[in-house]
Image (cartoon, rainbow, N blue to C red):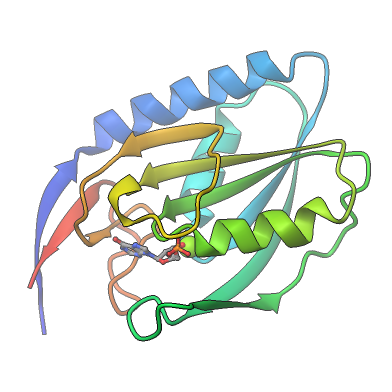
Length: 173
Ligand code: IMP
Ligand code: MG
């Protein structure tokens, strides 16, 4: 079935905001380097575009989690599907997320990655739906706060589709 997608945040606005975030991160870590953790698959496009806008040295690693229960159980369990390849000890780690919704994924990631003794650990998300928060998390860098609507594009999917859209759209079901 083809869903109708309406534009919530146009491409130019997303690109401009990512450039601002990249400049901010470059300034905040001036004279240092950052280790970006891309949370697959949703964060892939944001991670690439953000990294292109960071002017200090950047390294990457990738991980993948699956969250159960967001729409079935209220407890919601997050499971690690793919772990990082490299240790975090002594690094300026920034977790890059596509969206913070309930906050379960990020609070889980903060707990397990924080235990690996990074020099610093911050969170950067392209989108935030604060209304949906179940677990409180402190986000250091936010692209856009959005209302409680299901969004796609820029890495975000609906049934694995629409990740390639260069803008943030809303699925009209
Ligand atoms: P959490 O509820 O904060 O743990 O978010 C879990 C994951 O749900 C996010 O990383 C996204 O992959 C996915 N997600 C949450 N809201 C949306 C949405 O509006 N569109 C697409 N994926 C979403
Ligand atoms: Mg995600």
